[in-house]
Image (cartoon, rainbow, N blue to C red; front, side, top):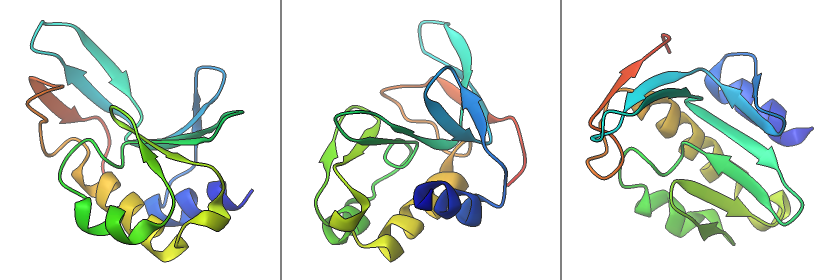
Length: 122
């Protein structure tokens, strides 16, 4: 699978399943302002029926510069949706993955997290 190889190459790590459908790389511990805490992958994807769903690429900072160059995509709250890889510039996607990987756990998003701590090293 091409997307799996891209994520492996950009993170330098092996994937782990997060539930039945999310292929994740690395992990972070998070705490919401409400006190709810949990763990999630630093970056990842899910090959869902409606679209490829990518996680961790838009949460931690402004990626407007790269998103403007990416190609056909949609944004959700914390997710990036692609209909197919052929619709996007793969070099730009690789940059988004690298940036999301580097930013995860180092920048707290005021809307989502009270604090985020990296649970693994880059």
